[in-house]
Image 1 (cartoon, one colour):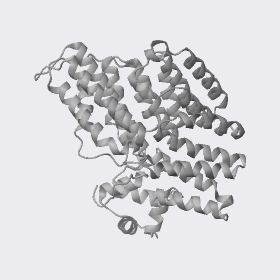
Image 2 (image 1 turned 90 degrees about the vertical axis):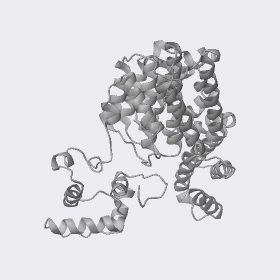
Image 3 (image 1 turned 90 degrees about the horizontal axis):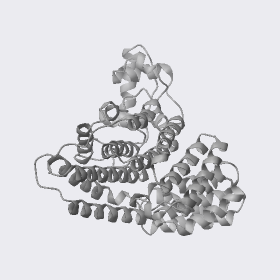
Length: 447
């Protein structure tokens, strides 16, 4: 997008401006000019646009009418949903396409061959439409695509591709995914070209679609970790399509869990609950470790939705299922899920339900067993827990441990954002030198 840096565009208005090639000053001037043409004397400035995009407040109704006129948005569309959801920053192409193998291939090709990563730092699909993606996955029944012309794709070739994906996943867990987005997209291009042009048996085609789903889900996670939320959502949706085409309920449920977590963290609570309800429908057809993961993600989603009792029940189900799980039955993409992850989920649940005094023990147990990328985020959560219990020393210690990991090479925007949350929580102690030092260190990491 012309005139925009590489960072994520976190507000729909910023995305719309970027598509128009307008900076904040020029956009404010355009609003004033259009306002005068419509008989409205508006005082919009660059600072006004900045505050809208920061979320301080919304434009008044007259200004919204002028913006809608500039963007050619009908008034009926503008008044049907609140600001900023009527802005032309969302899409429905990923939802409207049929759930067939041909549409799945087209979706994979669009992602694999896309010229650049989508920089939208907000969800490209929300509300009922987002929940509908999960419902469509549950009811779709496409057949595996027939073989196309080209070289034969052998099981050994798919094995080698799987090894590449596993290596990429291992690297991502060490340092975060932002450094490996291009590598993952290269793998997706290779798999998609095999699906498009290769000759293979039905069983090999099924494995290729499964692998495409794994890579898309991994790309979704990497994008989410980098706060590229629309790109994450696009890849998660393609992963669902590929998993359905492959007939892989476990991989589909796994993807729905990630989609729901993203939605919950973007304040799409109803859609998040709906996505987890969809994942629950395949509970009887997935291994115990997947059932544990579904319950753990339900814990997170219910907690964010304010349904503490349901969250507690889901957490108990997660521990019960994990006790019954046989790691030998777990697919490789679920190797990350175990007691450490579940203790982290427990810690976040306790923190959100006002039980900070119990949180620190669960998080301390979790952080020592976590992968480096997760350890940075969890130290940030631990700092918040210590801060809530009044243990400033513990909060500062956890903060510096998280900062150390980031400075040593953890490239996870989530880790930085968690520390920014910690910095805000330090506000009552901002006059203390050691708190100022920690806050300044966080500011440097976020710069």
